[in-house]
Length: 273
Length: 290
Image (cartoon, chains in turn cyan, brown):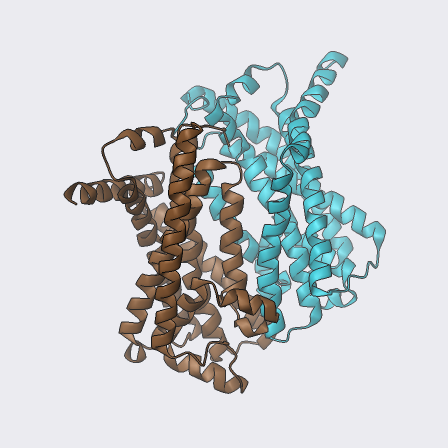
């Protein structure tokens, strides 16, 4: 590794993050849809909680969960599936012949995706809070920053690993991403506290970083959140930190392996499968 | 007519291949069942957490059946629009379909028919799961078959018709078609009494609900499928909780027919207008790599 190699890869990170960031201003209408669409589901679930006369915090849980769906969808459709789209449009082979690490490309996608998605998620929370008059009370700002950071690193690390697994997919990529939507919303407790799924199910679902991240955020924003929590906040932060490191390492190995396999089987340039 | 039927049949076969041949039959069947059931289980858990497990309450059946039926709205409406998007943007075959000596509506309906068939399996599996595992209040002996079948068919036709209008919009705006589609489906989810009665909505939203055909479709199918649960839901609440309790079955069907006709006229107009505009602007073979 030398300075030139490092600079080249940093440029690759910037270059791949750039379209995601500039895309925010090029299609402002997408921003509208990406904020408004989760709000529709959030509204439906908030009304159902209201109809059942649930604790007011549950509406807040739904708003937080709805905001976090933006990250999960971004990981599925703009990280995991991305290399499949690139293959379909013919860009993948250009990425592969470039003298850079594939990890730089994925890191750029992740960084660009994180920024845009964070803006969308925060907007969803603000509008949701305004529409349903939910009171969020921030109890520990330091924990909030740490939880948010480790959750995103672990989540996008998982996305990078998925991207490598999706590398060889054809139409399966679309169907797999579709399949990983509702089951993950269920297992990770996007719309209800995950502890109610039972300890072992919640523990199993914790492999998806958003499960613990969301659980911790609910404890940070709602004083009574601890009653519905799966694990204490700092335990969740610790597990998320481990997941962050593990997913980043695994994604590197997985990417190398799948690329080798793709080259051997000649599937890296196949289109319209 | 014979030519249209052949187009319909071949389009349905093509749709089936595109939907199903990416995986072996077992994997495809698993995929088709897991997704709807887990989607429904989200609501089931929300209900269980709040009520502590009273699945014999009529509201549980109301919510469960509504969510199962909504699969048609989400999958079929989206599926009709996706035909145009996918054929043009992804497979780049829309222009070939256009210049072929076939009826384009028959082609779209054929592709939609297979969506309806696949979604119907998901709906049936979900309902069976609800009845067998979660005590959803559907008894074969009490089903009002004429009401169920007529409202189901009318509603499905209505959804396909709305999908056609959205497909027309897709001709003109590839980058926004998914957002518009999901937005329309989302509006139906919130405002059509899918998982909660519309009486909980603000008054202005209830007025909008009563214009949407999906509201009457949901009510009609529910009344057909579980007439006792719906009347018990209103009597338990002590007021007209569905906000449609004053409508007789015949009036409900009349409203559904009227809204279906209204949307048919509107959708055909939108589709034809978009079609002419797309031809004029050269958008039939447009690719945006989106």
